[in-house]
Image (cartoon, rainbow over all chains, first blue to last red; front, side, top):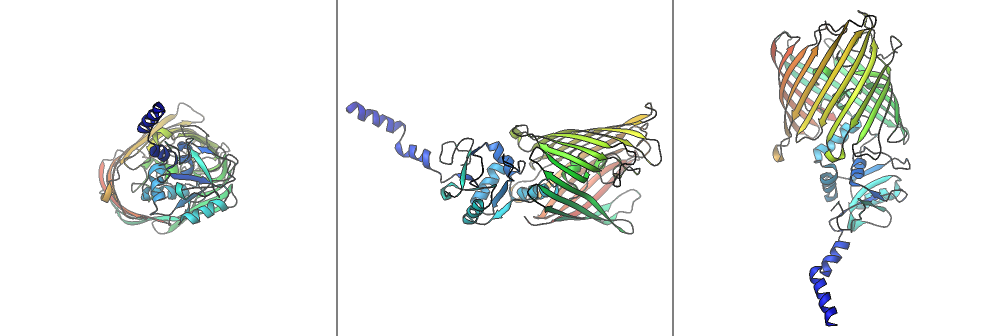
Length: 160
Length: 319
């Protein structure tokens, strides 16, 4: 019994319970990638995700056109995505899409949404849509895509 | 959406310089369904005593997938980088003007092309490979124009360009291309034209880097001993300043066009050119920029000139 208690104490010292819980479930700093529920994609590499957000990939594997929804300026989610995925500031992001449209590479720029609720409503309503959301605000109405095989609650999730 | 620019030019040579309205450019896009769309680009350009309207690009495109996109219409030829990256949008490009080899009205590069184009990206590859393959009308008998009303000699032009944007070096784009045509100028015998092109571009702004090279060979169709080459290239470097000075973007460019005297198509056209350009771009608005350029240029070995250009360019859109 004493050995068991001692072993538990050692384990808890090496790997405190609150830290373990935090690593498995803390999604407060994570951005989740969400798609319409009919989208037949469960996992994207960060490279593939970047290609989709840059509109270099415009179709899902089933040939549904990808509809990109992006939050309006001055939201934390947008700032995060511009920094990590696009690696651009606001001005570069604007110029990128204007150039993309002017080169006739895309039919339109991303659809701009002004709130989390609006974004969720549109992802639910539009087949082929993809967007990003604070992981704490996810609902069951949309499908969460793994990024590099990880969910927002997983340790090592790349969009934290 | 549209673009426009107004320039002020000063030349120390014979041209008077002064103010110039550049081009007013409008474009439209219509998505007819998820895969089919129409794109048009129309320009109005100020001439000496008139304004000239033109259909710059008119493209009908069907996207089968990311790998196969088939279109037909009038394009900017997919040769090298600049010609299909910035089109008529002066605001999009860092500098006041295009490189001399790719300027509108260039005799060195066939700027426009009418025909069909198959393009797409190769899926699931970290090199970000993509291709463009075109087939259509070659140059008009006035060689600065494309064959808008048909190929004048029945020998169509074709082109192939391969591009790579490796994911490991996000921002890097590079490519090689080949263009072939038989040219029938109004004032000389038929000439075979072959053009190889290559480019490297770092598409970020800290820094921005573009280098492009073009090599053309022109050969008399009936006498292959009459031939000559063109070598044209430029290197451009720019850097967007940081923090509160990020509206400012200084840049430099060096360019050189070297045409053999023996070239049967271009050798007597006075196209040799060398320039060193130093400028700065000031983005005083999200949708407008003021650019100032000092240009030390030499046209056709005629001695160096010190020229200046100022330009206000803007884009008419909101994003």
